[in-house]
Image 1 (cartoon, one colour):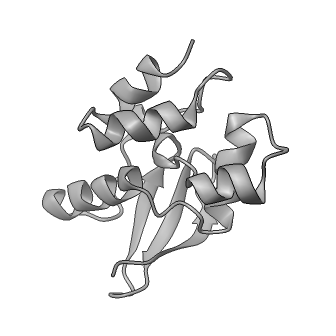
Image 2 (cartoon, rainbow, N blue to C red; image 1 turned 90 degrees about the horizontal axis):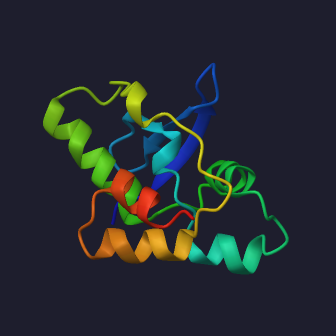
Length: 121
């Protein structure tokens, strides 16, 4: 089982550094990949309405063991550089994003950026 743990924010706050607890290797995760886990979103922080604050809080609690971060980790492994920053993915969520919809789209195989666009009104 792969477990990712939050380490710190990048200087600008638009990416986070996580550690693979199995291997101990750190890797960069763009903000747009910090899709909150449903448990964090609905049970731990149902009062947080701002999607960016929710993503930050859940990331800091390492509550984002979802497929978006795992797919990004595999992408970085394939690229051969776990600390590679992809600036085009370092953006905040639209205020109208529906994370449940995003998670469903990702599970269907939709690329994360497309899922975020599709699930924002």
